[in-house]
Image (cartoon, rainbow, N blue to C red; front, top):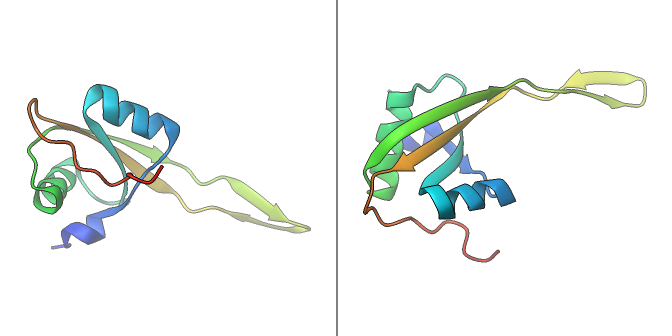
Length: 97
């Protein structure tokens, strides 16, 4: 059993992520690649003490990157959109922007 902090890696603080947070009551996180929607839901509920309505996930394939003649790939990663239930207080994790 993974801990909640191993499942939720970090919040994604971008213009789109903050816009979705304000308008749709949805939080955006980078999560562990093998985490399921149920594990993500339980992790967010335990860390932020809120009730989750739904979870949507997207898997991003790593891009090829070059340094001179050497090539490599960025790692694959997974993003989760976590919608909170109506009436839940939005946690503040991006206050200094």
